[in-house]
Every structure is written in structure tokens, then in C-alpha cells.
Picture 1 (cartoon, rainbow, N blue to C red):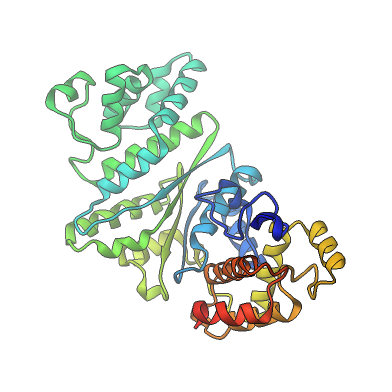
Picture 2 (picture 1 turned 60 degrees about the horizontal axis):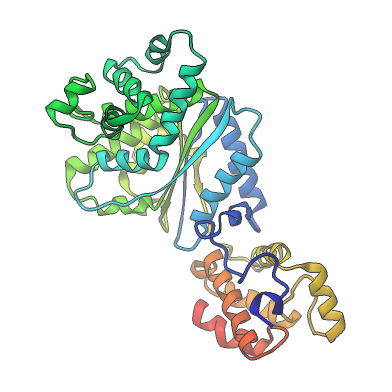
Length: 385
């Protein structure tokens, strides 16, 4: 019998949860009901004022930051808040930062993640329902260069592709600039150009019934930026996005930090945090307390394991387990939870899920129907020790 059937798993091959590999895993959020409700409440309010979310999610390594971002995007798309005027269009960005990276590279990553096809599709939709397309474009942005670029992007072809490259902040030759009728490269006069381009895309999305929200992960990499001017460009980009004047592009930023003092300085600087509001800085703490760990694991197992099949197997084989603890014996379940709480720093969802998976593999490899105390005592000290 294979691993999946050995432990009555539902539609999955292991106990691992990773929404980047299996998009359906984005629907899971275990053991943190109060935090879950708090984040959703903040997002609902944000769709009223400033009309798009602006939130920072942070915590130590393994705290579930990435899962949180994917979960919130999934919730937003599948259970749209009543306060959201339009259909949420969520975009995931896993940021990459080098020592000399500037906000121009962040803008390029944002735009490429959004995708030319999406923006072009919105322009075509706006064109199809507009009596005067040019006047509709002017409503999106006060920059005539952006109006020209959007017009060419809708048309497609070589000019459309050049216009998209310009909107993403890539440098065009003088000839290419002349062909799409723009006066300069985007960003040549500062970060404000780049943000205006992104905001225009958000306004375009809103004009055709969407709300654009970016979910940006791995922002702790901003610690890699060593050059003063480069760091300041990142700060200016996020500050302008955080400003009340931005009501078209939402963002939920995730970064790793053991304490707020460990956060990249440009994400928590006063002029940024005051715009985002302290209520929208969400700390993901470790599970720490035994009751929290038990709730997390029980909710996880209830979703991943076919409970009806597990209960049949427990009764048929007189296994020393229960529906709430399967595939662990009752004592092994308690033991695993105790191990998870020995070090507060290591009591994270990542470590707990890894322990469950490795214990299950060890049991399957030894042809044991359940995970017993001996297996937990072999695996858990290595992960939590």
C-alpha cells in the first residue's frame, strides 16, 4: 500500500502543505482563529478606506508567512469582502534583491508578475465599452506618456510590446521612444514615475471592475541593499504606495524578522508605518503553548486525513489511536506536542508539519499502522532540539 492510502490521506501524497507547489493548499489556515479574523477584518476595512489593502505580515522563520499570504489571497478571491468594489485580482511576487538593487527592479518584478496579457486585456475591455477611449485613458492618469503607452499596448504588435517594456521601466532607445510617442524613459526623473505607472494599472483594473492587490513575499531580502541611494529608492517606492493618495493598488508584504527591530528599515520607517497604520503590521508569533500546538495539529489532520476511513481503520485494527490524533497514537500525539513546545523559537508551523511528515514516513517505512512514542522520540528531538 502506498503512503497516501496507508494514512488515509485525502487527495495528496504527503502531509506537506505548500501553496506554491499545490495551489489548493492556499485554502488552509490552522490553529490561529483570532489572528485569522483580525487580518480579515483589517482587509475588509481597507477596502472602504483607502479602498485597497496596505498590510505588512512578519515573523520568524517558519512562522507561516508564505502560507498566510497565499491564504489571504485565496480568501479574498473566493469569499470576496462585501466592502470590495470589484473582483479582487491578486498577484504573487517573490522578491529578489541584490546589494545594488533599486526600486526600478522591484517595479519590473511587480509588473512582470502582473503580466502584459492582464493589462492588455483590461485595456481591450475598456475600449469595448467606451464611446471615447482616449478620454477614458486620461481619467486613469495625468501623465500623457502613460496615456500614449496604454494606447499602443491595447493595439498590440511591436509597438504594443515596446509600450509594455516602457511601462515596466525598461530602457528604450531614442527610436523606440519616438515610435510609441513618449518623451523619456519611465523612471528617468525618479521613483514617482514607476509608482504612477503601477497606480495607472490599478486604476485601469478598477475601471473594468477589478481591484488590484499584490502579495509580496521575502521582503527581508531588502537587508541585502547596501547602497544608500538604492535603499532610498525602495523606501520612496513603498512610501508612495502606502500614501493615502494611492487608492488603486493594494499590497500585503511579508518579511522574516524575529523582532520588529530586525525588519528592513525602509519597511518600518516612521513615514511608512504612519501611512500604513500600526494595526496593519501583523506579527505571526510561534505557536509556543501546548494548547495552540494541539489545536493546530488537530485542525491540520482533520483537513488532510479522511476521517471516516481513519475511524474505520482504528476500529478494524484495534489501533491505539483516536479520530482526533490519527495517525499518531494518543500518547505519541501528546509527546509530539510536548516536544514542539520545548523551545518557543522552534515552535513554528514549518517545524511541526515537518515533524508530522517525517514521523509518518518512518512509520510507513517500518510498516507500522500508526506513529508511536518510539518514532516521535527518534524524529522530534532532531527537529525541535
